[in-house]
Length: 305
Image (tube, rainbow, N blue to C red):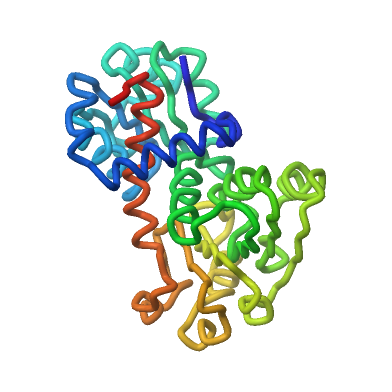
């Protein structure tokens, strides 16, 4: 039985295969309309989400399947004190595949011990968010035409940003990659991420606290919000939340071939004036998420066209 907890659960070849299927779905969506008929996806979201939950649901419905689940812990028996393990043991009897988001790191590993159906980690605390990373890889592949030989800037909350951690882990397996790490000192990339996926692999990297100084050299700029929900006190959040704001003025310093990405939701770290810039692709990125999740659901259920 396949599960997806960490992006590294997938080989580069498996990722490339998923991207190929997603490309085919984009080109000919009608071919996939009924491939998951009578299959049920359970979306168990113990933490709020818009894009991830809805794109999973849209993906399954677009494959002809059905969806059940909940969108917050307060609307489930978790509010009564039920454990994740017990919830999974019950729900895996109702569905063919489960997508789960939980605020606690490691919760998907607990789910694995009790599930009789495939589990997809839809985000666990500050750890990993593998389907967002698949979305990011499909976006980069479409927008840049390659996943090799790229200078990738990640900007904002690199400490708690699970999307950043997963993206760096995934891109570290491709050739010719260089990372530029842009953050306040307090939100710099955790040492374990830097060691395991950058230093130990001999990947060139550069750290900066100033976006203006480095934006002109980037192929990809991956913006992230400073996440209020990960902070222990409001004062630190308020002090750091506006550390980086991407504006039209900053974009003038960037390459014509730059692509700006963001896992969303955006707060104010990208000016709305940037939305009309052809280099901004974060809304296309959200749309790509549906297609790669369609490919993933098919793969994990062993469904082919």
